Length: 245
Image (cartoon, rainbow, N blue to C red; front, top):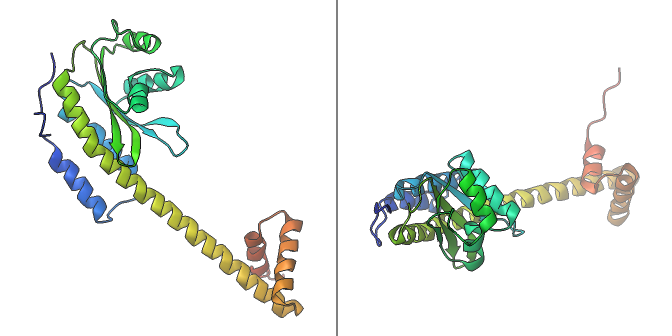
């Protein structure tokens, strides 16, 4: 029997999703933001569609690779992994076609026969998946699994699709903040390296009476001789000399 736990236009947990979005807009996010958001999405999806026995989220990485980044249990993670390994399954189809996919019974499903056979062997019977889509593209997909046939109906498909639309915005925002933090860290690292090189040039100019260009050339020579980067050679040059005994 299909779950009718949500009306087509209202999701019972919109309030929780809105609260997460508000936290993000307030920049109150940790480095674990993406993981935390995905865990929340999995939890809310299970609560939204009561017939689901398991849920998971697949994300598309920057290189186009796929990974199950959050799952409610090992059976979900294994079912997802087999899709990636076999190159077939409802999640991959949802990503490729940017459209929801539903399997009423894996034992009679004619699409993706190899994956369906393995899913049936693992005790799974029904599947529902929807892509996480924003105007920037498809970020991944959310999947629901059930252990009985016919667990999901058209209403559940509509509900999960609406849910995925809201969840996609959270995922996209969280990933954007994470990238911004990563680029900020890289920028700070670049500035530190530049400062080290500038100080090392000044040190060489004072110690050896070199001009700025000659001092930089000297630093590069030291770096090549040591098999290190100019910043690493600069750090060694500026490190305090060890005290004699």
